[in-house]
Image 1 (cartoon, helix red, strand yellow):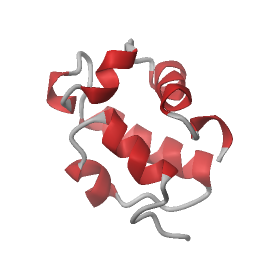
Image 2 (image 1 turned 45 degrees about the vertical axis):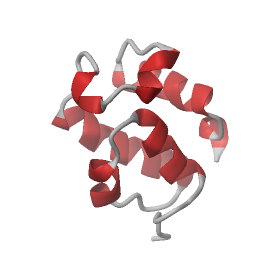
Image 3 (image 1 turned 120 degrees about the vertical axis):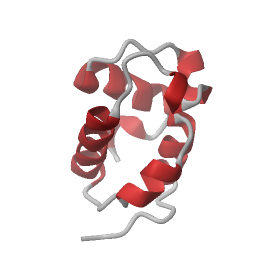
Image 4 (image 1 turned 135 degrees about the vertical axis):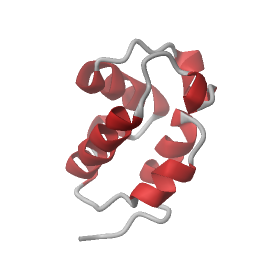
Length: 84
């Protein structure tokens, strides 16, 4: 899975590819409270994660996640992610 195996790599990917200014603390912040986060970022994130992992990432599961840490756990653990 490239550079997103750990939470730090995941956050670096979000910073560089989505243009979000995230601190390490933002990994545990409710997404509704993250400056600049919106539904377009969510869609771009799903697409980016599918490209990075080579697997489908269910949008519903990402929508249910409340933090970037939860999204990372979903993808890094492969939980509920399905192969194409």
